[in-house]
Length: 84
Image (cartoon, rainbow, N blue to C red):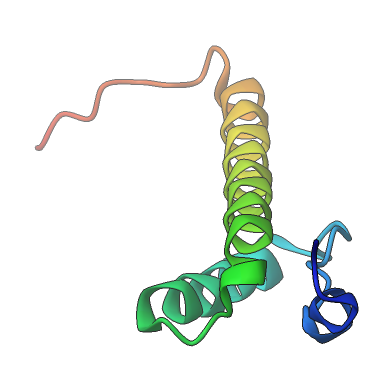
């Protein structure tokens, strides 16, 4: 049986969508630092790992969206650079 206070002391993991790529990256860096330092209580490790996976996916999606936009903008205008 779990101790009733164990749940109360565990901080909930944020599930909100980051406002920007930079905010997600900052949160991810802080989370990784906490995970690696061992300061995160055992009850929070799985939630921290899950949040990290969400943040990583958000960052990847943002980068992919930017790459797609650049590809669209450059479609037909990409030329091989030749030094003079």
